Image 1: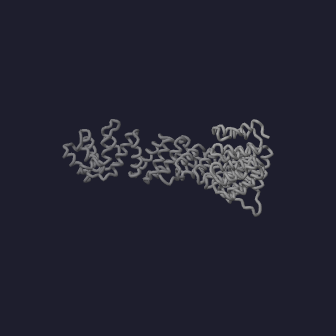
Image 2 (image 1 turned 180 degrees about the horizontal axis):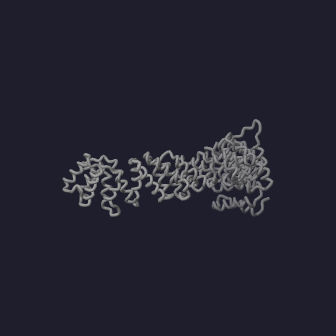
Image 3 (image 1 turned 30 degrees about the vertical axis):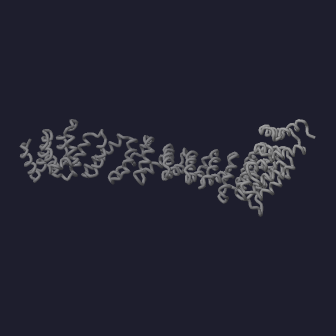
Length: 543
């Protein structure tokens, strides 16, 4: 017998009523009605109605009321496909064992695109048989069916009672257990692990660890690692090493979830060496992770691992690694060694700049750095610039004094060529003393071709240096050439020959140079040429 309310609602399903009223009536019937032949017939007519909205609601209501007699109609709707197939499948799944078995049987005959919908429908069926069938669908050979089933099952977990969750977990764990003659695809194994991880049962942990090794497919390893990510970080060293091996995998789908777990693992000083292979990982993101975890440790092996990043093509990674090295004692020692052994000027500059901020802590290294810089300067090796850059940051005054000392020593040993290298370097500094500039001009004069042609005046740097000195009141150029006993008659003749033709100040200087040449070699041809030049300029030989 139908109660009055149900009768009124059935009347509202009549085609003469507005569509929205009919759809609302069908929806309310699912909440308040009880099964009866009259109601079944009314809903069956609604399923075949011309209104799409009413058909969809009628299908949902039939499933909600679990009307077994509707199964043939539901299966027909499923086979026909279209937007109503999914709702029809969900309704059939609610009919208990009969509906579940019918869906399982139908799954082998429908179009491939419908199979995932049927699997998803089983997962939301709400009956024990439907849930069991959905779990079995996880073993299907079609990845689409597997993915649909597991996604829907995971979405339904919150609505399960404790006993239902326990039963579901038991079945999933059972399926994960390796069995003879049982071949489960990696997609199915991955889905099972996703499901047991979502269920939050610790019994799945061993299954996860068993599947992260390189002997398993990538998708399966990634799924196992993602499942492990839902658990507390491991403390067992063996398991941490397993994760470290995954972190350096070439496939980032494996490396990424491993890093997420390792992020929360603390590293003891004793275990540091186990983590160093991360610095050799193919992916720069893994190497940066290693920088964050280990980069501040003051250890020689860590510093060596950081130094290896200098050869990596990622410029940002290079700079970050060098910056970390510069903050530790072991790192700075290795940077110094790398600077001294740098294979190219570019590499030398990289290591020198990295240490500039800490240069004041390097007084003990000054001597060795200066020695290497001198060797590079003499060899015209451009690495010298980087070495000198760091030496200036250590002690600029000491560097200038040592360069001056080296230049004067070489000049006194008559090694004018090498002395000139240091003097030119000193002259780059605006604060270079006039004494050093005189040494530069004089050494240049010793090495000059000493061409007496007038046009050579503007082409000879040594003559240009003397010209500047003459106009500088801070130095007595005339007095200095008299003191410079190492300037020979040839240089003095060349100097005087060019300057005697200049302005009054230059002419006086040139004349003094010629007279000094005569004095130092009175009976030579040089003296004769000097006298001739003085007479031609109308100047007294004795001044």
